[in-house]
Length: 441
Image (cartoon, rainbow, N blue to C red; front, top):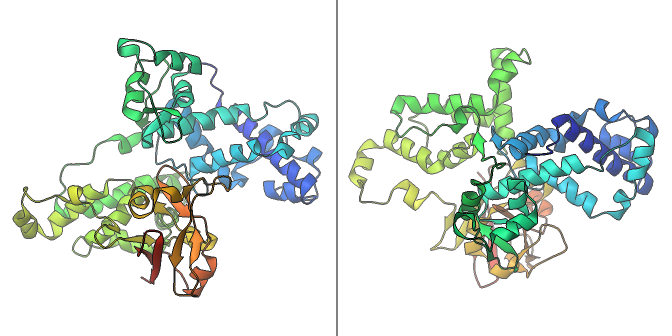
């Protein structure tokens, strides 16, 4: 792509943006609060903060995903995963910083102070370019529709060129439609077809063995070694061993801890999950393992079912629905119930996430609002066992894949001594009424 910033440019740009946010905190909330936010000695005035290139971005949790976002947005390379969740996603948290700056005149008016103290900067432009590119690519890879500005970013053309393509003929034509808000969008397969004809477009590719297809069938004694090898690669156990000079046991423990952090389990719980024998592995464990390893849960469930219950699987035969056809879903359509597994992060912050594909089938269409508080939707009633009055809440759309009740459940979780892995069952009892049942694991 033309005029693509270097990664160092992006780091400098991100640092200037963080400095502006921190400086605003100093001015508007508490002197020294900005330095504390940056992990700098609070007594240091803004003028004494490190130069852009000397600031340690690793001290800012949300910046952990910056290099991943850069490779993904600029070059279409993905190793591991990207996530647009605004609270926990490596890409979503970066985008939230941009939204914070865009929404605050107080922050924007302080760019000049940062330039006076630390020299010229680009007002976060390089950082913005990469994050918006990565978000556009994420939309193309994981959502149903892509907007015209996002297609323009990915094709490295101006938006006018994309709009002209709507009126072109033949292969150059781009077919668009309007979404429920009246915005012009392009279905992802059509967007990808058109983009492949653009010289500067880079299609997303997976790096390393993650780019290879899953084997068609694993023998019984191959399943657990395959899963453990994927776990080591997914959570960089070799990196921990070689680069950080950890012992084999320390690197292995670090890998389990990192895997646990991705799904709300402890490292010891992940160890037990992956060190059990195939004869102990339940098909019920497959969705969680698939989530940890970023592999297809239907494929994994089929491997385990074939290994554990070969005769039964033969009797089912090809004429019966496969695991992939049926799905192993926490949503029970007939009983109108949905099981939601709680995570450490959710319990700590008083929320739980619901997959959008299930939420669309359980809740009315008018209850989905924006993830911020600017566009709240119609509320539903969640009855529970703590008091007679229900929780009244809409559902905020966190990403293309996830929604979450806007109401916080901290007191509810505390009353039930909630732990990661516990399940909250949501049962529809009326058009806009639901019942919550807490199921400890």
